[in-house]
Length: 379
Image (tube, rainbow, N blue to C red):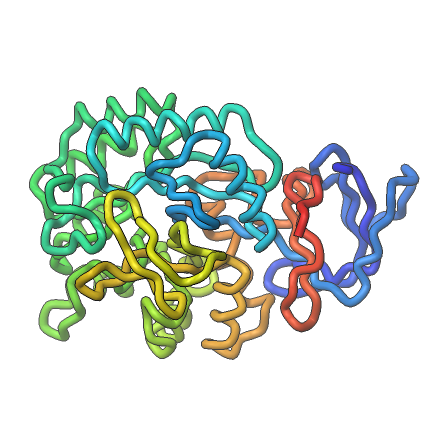
C-alpha cells in the first residue's frame, strides 16, 4: 500500500500542527487538504500527530548488526528494524578501521544502497575517520588513524560509486584544509569531530567549507573561556551540530543550552547507535573494539563510552523532556535539518512532491504507524 488518503491528521507544518488531510500516491505526497477524489484507501489518523520520518545520519548499527562487518542482507534487515522506531532514512556509519575492512564495509553498503530492501531507505555512507586526532580517538584504535590522504579518500569514493555522503575529520591535522576541499569536490560533506582543534582552527575549517560537527561535546577538546576550542567555535559559528540525546553522552543542561543556541535549523539528532541497541546488556563489539553494555551504556574496558543504544524515537522524546519544549518545535532536529544538510530536497518535510516518509505518533509519544515512501513498516 503506497497510495492512500489520510484524514483527521494533526499534520506537521512549519513548527506547528494543522488538522487536515493528506493524499499519497505511489509513495509520494501529492496533495494536502483535499478530498479523497480518487477513492484511495483511507487512514483515519484521529488522535495522532503525523510528522516527517526520522533521518539518522550517524548510526553504527543496532539489533545485533555492526556496520563495519555487516553484509548487504544484514543492512537491509537493519533498515526494516530501524523503521520500527520511526527512522525512514539513514546513513551507514563506518567507523575508523583497517583499510581492507573499510573497503569491505563500503562494498556491502553499496550493494544495499543499489538494491534497497523494505523499511528505512539507506541513503549513503558516513565515514567516521580515518583522518582524526590520535588524542581523541575515543573508541577507534590508534593504528587505524591516518594523516589526510587524498588518494585514499578518492579510492574510497570510487569503491562507493559516489555514495559516501559525509565524513568526520579533525580540522587541526596537517593537510586538513586541502582534505576539506577535496571531500567537497567528491560530493562528501565534511563534519568536524574527534578533534583537539583550537577555536581558530575550527573557524578556518568552517570558512573552508566544513559546516557540521559530529556528536558535539564528545571526543573533542573541552571548552575553556580563554581558548574556546572546537566546542566553543561550534556554538559561536553557524555550524550544524549533532547531538546524542541519551542523557549519558551529554548532560541534559548542556543539551538544553545547545538547543537554545542551535534551534530551529542548526541542530541534528543522531543515535550514534551500535549493535547492542534493542538487545539486552552483555558483550558486543563496535567496529574493531570489544565493548560491554551495562544498564544500556556501551563502554570499552577503560570505561570510555563506545557508541550508544539510542533509537531516534527515544532521542526525540528525550529532547522534549530535557528542554520542556513542544513536539512541533523540535521536529526539525529529527528530520528537516539532516535532510537539508545532506541536500535531500525530497525528504525531511511534509509537502506535495516529498517522499511519503511519515510517522504517526499518539499524544503519549508512542509510534502507531510508520510509512517509508508510502509503504507501511511493521512495528
